Length: 159
Image (cartoon, rainbow, N blue to C red; front, side):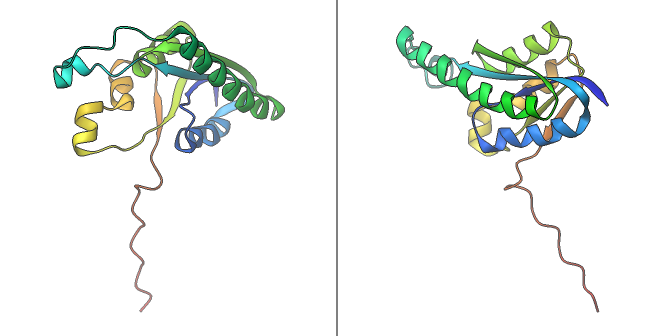
């Protein structure tokens, strides 16, 4: 069993599926660090040759941070009541960079994260946070697939 896990959450039910897996692989009383990243604006200049967003409204940014912090605290309370030591971190930036940075800074044993399973143009334009984390991370990454995208196994013929 592992001592310390990093679980990135983006507020989606899909991302929260990683929490169930984290509970199973961290030792009893182990540490789980929950991370949410308040994402920077999409770099439109790179893809669409449009001017990048120059400013982020500080009030809106602070509101996002507060909502994100409350969200993580709710998830942390549930994990703490199950006997885990839980830290919450809210970062500003790009998710893949923040995940790798926090994994290094806190020397976690592993990262447990879900993947949205984007394909085609969405993946090309947006990339895959999971793939970028896998390429740069200093530790193992447990990837929880998008259950909706998984195909049901074909039924076996009973004849």
